[in-house]
Amino acid sequence: MTDMDEGPRGPGGWKATASRYALLPLRVFLGVTFIYAGLDKITDDVFLSASGTGSIGEMMNAVRDSAAIPEMVDLALKNPEGFGLAIGAGEIAVGLGTLIGLLARLAALGGALISLSLWLTVSWQTEPYYYGNDLAYLMAWLPLLLAGASVLSVDAALAARRRRP
Image (cartoon, rainbow, N blue to C red; front, top):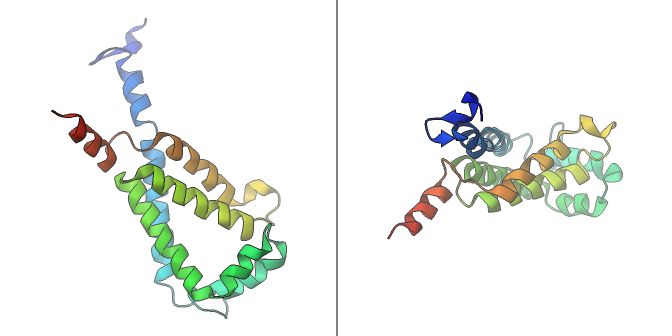
């Protein structure tokens, strides 16, 4: 064991602490990003339109024939404004849940499903695939889906409270 392995909490202290907090930067990044993305969508009158430059309707029409699952786009095109609003509200809910660590695994599942649906529709045609960000976001959600929010979170505080006699 080296001096680097020991810390204020004994052997392995800094490594154990680093491991406990390892997912926190990812949580903060995804939480803030999804809150921002959701707010950006629901406050943009142009985006929340069925047609016109920059609208959700125009974007869905543009990607319909190149989507992996065109039926998903067809579903969105039945009510583009409602779909855009639902995506924006979902992103805000997922972002808040992730950022504060409330129902963190459920929030991560929501984030993964949003990212998956956007990958299969909007960014499916991106070549090479690694230029599309939705697949990277999908992969980023998976560690949080598996691990949850074990530190600096409402979930952790509630779990600690339940453990107290």
